[in-house]
Length: 294
Image 1 (cartoon, rainbow, N blue to C red):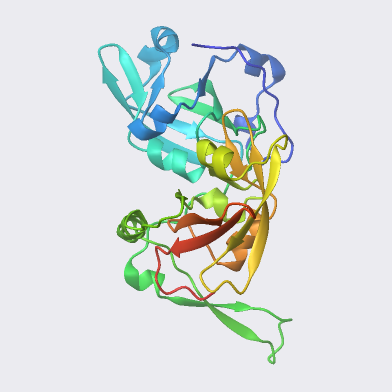
Image 2: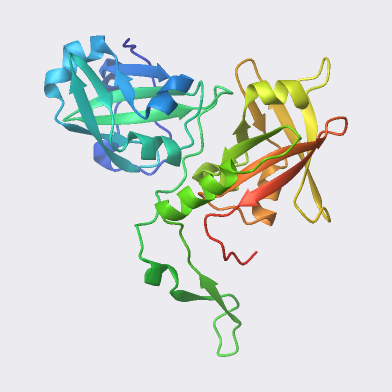
């Protein structure tokens, strides 16, 4: 379906003059919105509403450009069949980068010439914080290059630190995923693939709602504490589990767990409930990059 949804520009987003719209222009621009059903993520494509295609489909080429409020631009190919049009090649990467999940709400404003401005709302009905664009694909040799950052002052006696820039390849991410899928336990567990916004996001990480309802909630409470530990059990992290009507999320405290355990995009975390009474989970981390200095 289509919807004329009024949006407003925000001064903290750096846009060029061509990106700025006056209030009448935004109101009159064609919009459509999409709720993200679980099947959409499984299918790997997103259907554009027929009514929108009926009005503006002839203006669309074989690909479109999706632009988010921080200026990042994504090219996504269209799939057309029997009057239906889907966002296809490139959509999965877009959705993964912005951690688009079940029941998220996306607003598409059409700016003409196959360009859409996209705003993403999470399950709390709040607009997300848009992560930076992914770095360009690198070769194995490039990933092993060492860059030196100046940490103190600028004098000849400054302390220098070497940081190894690493980015997991798709093959490495797939290896981590397959290793996680081989995990077995007599205890209940679930799996989370680390997305870019899960690494530093203060909003937390989405988890299966059915699992959280069964194992993490207490009667008459919507927010519950969950304790996370890793293999050695020497340190624990307390995080808040927020349970909504159609979602669950590990929120407050998650950012510290992610930082302290050096989680990176492509890692896979298996959360195993080892004490239901205490809401205690052992977290097994399957890393996309095996050698991580943490």
